[in-house]
Image (tube, rainbow, N blue to C red; front, side, top):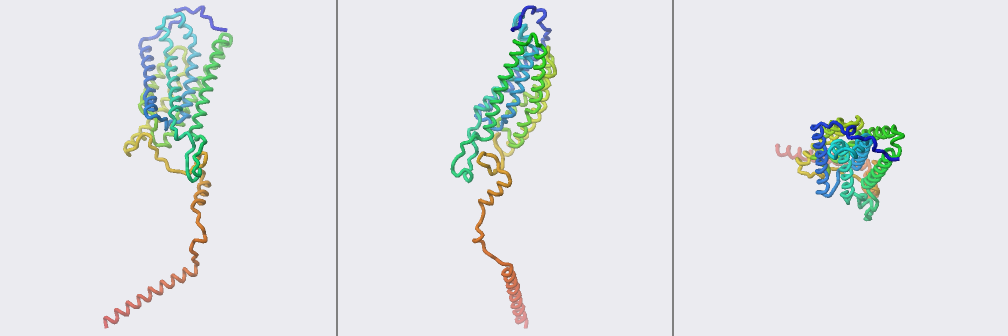
Length: 348
């Protein structure tokens, strides 16, 4: 069953769009697109995505997917009105969807670039000669394996969200209108949860590395400032509830914390004369799968590598050490007596 456009009239579809609201929405849409360009440029320029957490990208992309289809469902009647209104009015009414579509495309693009420019030397477990016995490891590293898992989860999530949304809108939209609302509310709440924890993996990774890596400070500066403007422009759109814009308010606050951290580490690296990818990590023993060895394994391996043969050690008994000490004391006394005798003879 498909939707019928009978009954849709230009009078009922046109909303009262204020020129200042339209101008601000267009400005935010272009600003959102431009804000991602420094991140895209930095990954392509340095040909590496080192320093970016794959879980951070996964949560961001899934959140953008949820909030995009949330607003598509809530404003589906506005989308249908494009059949009976002018293109300019349609464009003005759909600015909220266009903004979120730009966000979704750019998040997906950065995830693709992250996989394409993943450092090749980090795709396999680290080679350590005394552990691998001159045989380089062939198994994937933990970081690369996590990146593949992230890409798979994002792909499945996008396909599932599209299928469910299309089914509710075009097959069950007229009879079960409440299911559309419930699905839209679920997507909004899921997006809020995802965006609330999105920056935690990146905050932990940046704090541990103590370097900026491939993250773009310019992107974060523009996005932190634009997040709150973006929240306002979304909140004034018709048929939009708090479940759509609250995620970007939380995102702006968390991204501000990450920005402050990156600025501090970038200043520290410049002051020490290091580049943005410098990592001051202490060397640690690794197992064959690339995982750090636990303290017991480290201690056993160190003891095994530096174990000495007891037969080669000199055996010194307590009695012999005492005799040596006594002989040393006697020798010192004899020397003192000789010096005293010499002094007496000279005085006489």
